[in-house]
Image: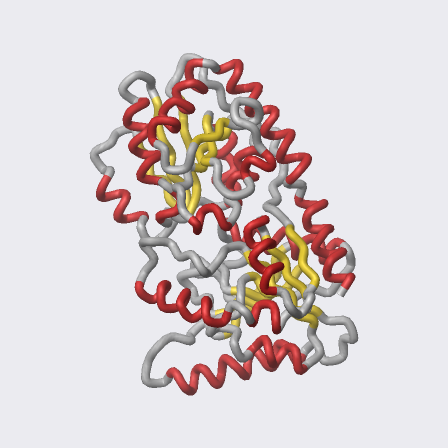
Length: 381
C-alpha cells in the first residue's frame, strides 16, 4: 500500500516519484494500492476520487476533513475509512505501507494502526522539516513546527527509511539508534527523444517548472531573463502552480518576455520541455534547498537540452560545470545571466552540454533501476 497526501494520479514532483515506484511494484507482480489522504476535488482537478491508473487502483480518504463544527464526526469517519482500507490487507502475510512523507497530523493515528495490523512501515522522505521555506503560509509553518517535534518518530516507527539526498541520509543516520535500514534513492526521469529545439536564428526559450516556493529562486530567474533580453531575443516560460503564482503574475505582468503557462497536463508539459532551448533550476542558497534534490532536474536533463542549475545539495555529485550542465552559485544573479548568455552565444557547445546531461540522466536517474532499488529494499524487510 502506497499512501500520502498528493494529487495522484496527475501532479508534479511527488506524484511522479510515487507513480514510478508504484509502476515498478506492479510490474514485479506485487499487489499494489494507492491511498491518497485529504485530497478533495481541487487537488484532483475535479476528477473521480477513486479509480485505476495504469492498472493500479487508487482511492481517497478524508477528502472532506476540514475545520468546522462537524470536524469531530468527520475525523471519526476518516479513521474508519483508514481502518477499512488497512483491514482489506488482513489476509496478506507480507504487507508493506510505503508512506510518501513523514509522520504528521494526517497519519499520526494511521501509522500505529497499520503497525498493529502487521504492516512493515517505510517512509519516503524528500525534504528536511527542520528547514522551512521562508514564505510558507501560517498553516504550513504550524504544521512544520509539529512535524519537527515528531521527527524522531520517522525512525522509531518505521521498519525502513528511503531518503532522496545525502543530507537526509546523514541526518537520519545520526538519529538512528534503532538501527533501521535505510537507502538513498535519488530522482528518476525517462529519456526523451522528441527534442525539437534549436537556438539558431530565432527567439531562445528558457523554461522553468515548479511550485514557486521561495527556495526555487523564480524571482532571480525572471530578473536574469530581463537582463539577457536587453541583448538577445529570449522568452521565459514558467510552468507549474503554487500559492505564489498569482503574486508573480501581478508583479511581472509588464515584462513581455515572461509567459505564465500554469499547470499543464503531462502530454502538453513534456511537449513544452522538448520545444524549449534552455532548462533552468535556479535555487537559492538556503538550508531547505541544500537538504533536498530538485525533481525537475531529471526531467530537464532527459530532454537533451542544456540545463542551468544552482549548485545545491548533491548536484555536484552528478553534474560538472561546463561539461554536462551549467552550474551557478545558488542565488547568484550575475552567474545566472552569464550562463544563459554563454549558451545562447555558443549553440554548438550548448548542444554538447545537453547531450552529456542526457547521458547523466540515463546513467544516474534511470527510473527502472532506481525503482528497482526500492523493490529490493522493501523485499529485504
